[in-house]
Length: 212
Image (cartoon, rainbow, N blue to C red; front, side, top):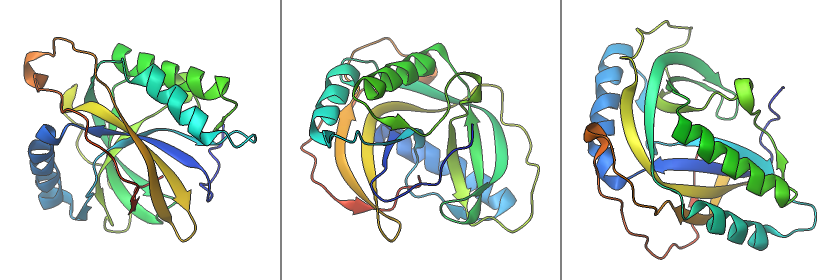
């Protein structure tokens, strides 16, 4: 399945870390930057799905459905299985990214998200099943030419995802945040990821550059 290019009006579902994870993520990025060059990705996340809103224009209802189904879910431990050099077609630059381990928690989250979007009549852009390869960009603007970085440590813990941001593509490669949904269910985290879940705050619409 070929992934269509992002167009204005498309909505990205990005999954972000707890703010408590950001300092250690920055240290991981800086370690990679020292070895491979490039520029730090400023907003760490992975894009779980991108979709075209339903033709009936029910974006507010779709967001309410997503909030109802995702809010009760537990935060997700995000782990990397490898490092990969890749070209980013939207930003037209080379990136160094962590390919993610498809854990049971991540697969359940992806399935719940897909089910909710399909029921609302959205058109999904990313494949599911064996074709789904979520990743987190660590560095961007990499030196030109494919590099073969060393493999990441097996199941390297990156962060605990506790928020889902809905970001809509605008003309001129701009993005508008439509909503932020917090994963609020309590669960016992593994020792390496035992981090309190941040409490939700009132979200204001803002325009930010978030990779599609």
